[in-house]
Length: 252
Image 1 (cartoon, helix red, strand yellow):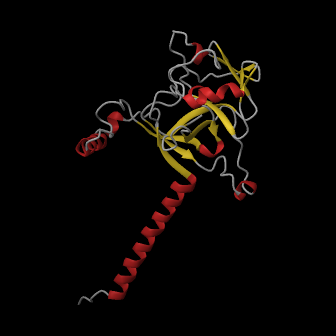
Image 2 (cartoon, one colour; image 1 turned 180 degrees about the vertical axis):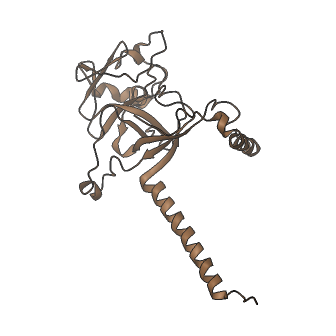
Image 3 (tube, one colour; image 1 turned 30 degrees about the vertical axis):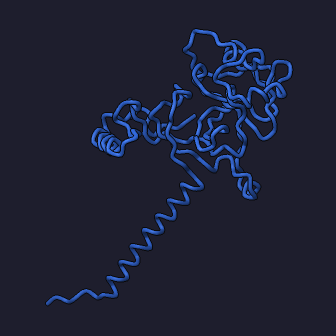
């Protein structure tokens, strides 16, 4: 003999499932909003440290948020050599990733591509050079007598006020950031300093990396149909397109 399920039990199970789902959603939103953020490498400027096709998890709590919590939780200061993700000062809707070269008070100078901070050459084993042609602005920064076509006009006009003895002085609350791919990086040389409030956090981990990101296997085409096709291709060719040697690699 069978018995009918108790409607109250079924209703309780349904409510429990909804509560569990909502709890998961709330936790996920909290983590994404306050703790970590996913970020995709969009350009070659950080090669070979970060490659196009790398997907990162960014630690948003690393440096604190400038509020009262900073006095309670021991957040660490932004240091030279840190890789940071930040809102591009010229267009804050864009996210950039670069390496900090100068902190507030530092005096920055490049001589034949070599970076000097406060008169001392930096040790930069992560830097990549590949262009043989010389560029006075790019390689011997700051050059006030040479206007590079890629420089932001507002930065070009304000730069002379910050240069002393051929060295650029990093003001309080700002950072000088450059790409590791030093010959092909749109960085602080071209648009200025990164304000502290623009910095989102520090990359923690490459959680996925895919090869050939500029080919037709990656989502990003204007057409919705193309994007769906690319997504389906990525799912069905997951094992072939994944760079397994870079996936789950810590960023340093």
